[in-house]
Amino acid sequence: MSEALKGVRILDMTHVQSGPTCTQLLAWFGADVIKVERPGVGDITRGQLRDLPDADSLYFTMLNSNKRSVTLNTKTEKGKEILTRLIEECDVMVENFAPGALDRMGFSWERIQEINPRIIYASIKGFGPGAYEDCKVYENVAQCTGGSASTTGFDDGPPTVTGSQIGDSGTGLHLALGIVTALYHRTHSGKGQRVECAMQDGVLNLCRVKLRDQQRLEHGPLKEYPQYPNGEFGEAVPRAGNASGGGQPGWAVQTKGGGPNDYIYVIIQPPGWAPLMKTIGREELIEDPEWATPEVRLPKLDQCFAMIEEWTKTKSKFEVMEILNALNVPCGPILSMKELAEDQSLRATGTVVEVPHPTRGSYLTVGNPIKLSASPAKVDRSPLLGEHTDEILGAVLGMSAADIEAAKAEGAV
Ligand code: CAO
Image 1 (spheres, rainbow, N blue to C red):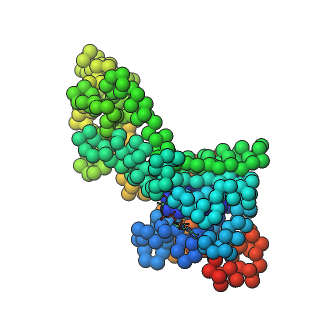
Image 2: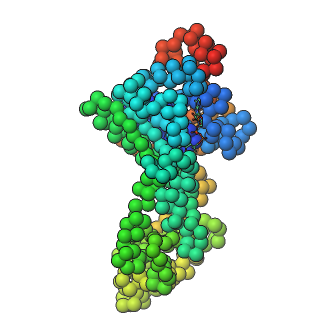
Image 3: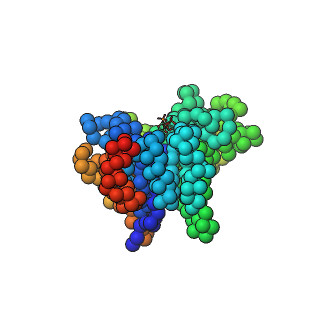
């Protein structure tokens, strides 16, 4: 068993969420990720949304596992010299600064290539080339500009952002794939290359089924949407509430308890119709020509789910899950974050892990959701600010103790 990316060294100049998600994934796979942070300040998220005074926030610790931290002021002469040496020693450089920030530091793509022609230089920006290329972007801006917000929520409500961080973590995932692809390409070409991901593009990629529906809309109403048959369709794909995005109708129905998450999502597939109707006590509808086929059910999906809900309201979401799964009816309880944090099967697979930390005690984090059979992914805590500065300057760059002290005295590290 060996770590899949062992031997790959990554110069991590990322901050906040999008970039750090990408480098955390690579670190879980065994890459040596060296996170560069401004002396005394660090990644801004270290201090954001703090739950404990004077300890790195969960925002930071949950996005920066398995990395080493070096402090470096890249706006000093000595800092630029050290950054140049780091570029020489690394296989990959990743950044998600605001557009133009790295150029202003003196490190354009042309300069980076000059320093190390084998390097893979990967970056995240809010937008690709075009009218908005200079804009700073955060998660929800990307959700709004990438098509997610206009298609999320209910028809009579405003555009809605989702809790899934598809702009930040989604783009980080895309970038990680770009990096390993470029690394693979380098193994036979010997050359590095530039990898760019725009958050708008990443969100749109994840919303491709909605662009599919935009084109279908030109040829008639979207029959699986709740607007069909009684509501109105305009020129653009409407918000679909909880309707299923696929060809199989689905909806979130209420279960016993009446709490905010006492719901279960149920999908009606043709083979599930008979057992489902039998279970909810509506056997007479199994063969009824008004109900028996997907086509006749389509205009009255609201009534279908209302009937199912009458029954689900008499059971807990876990009871419904057990009964319907035995019938091969796809369904899933709406799980709260509390339930997920306590879920023992997620702990057993390492998808939720508890990590010890020297200043904040143990914390829960989401481990690597990608499981490789021959390459384990152990989750280690995030580094303290500058924890590995001496180690990296000494062992990676070969600086002497005196050089390191001098760099510190100059305020470069
Ligand atoms: N030493 C010296 N200076 C440093 C440094 C270091 N180690 N690290 C960063 N800096 C400087 C940058 O060079 C920049 O200086 P200039 O403005 O003079 O060029 C400055 O710190 C601020 O960097 P920034 O503009 O990237 O940070 P911000 O807080 O103003 O903006 C963000 C944050 C996220 C909006 C912006 O970085 C961005 O749009 N990034 C691309 C899109 C992205 O990834 N967004 C997702 C963020 S997570 O929701």
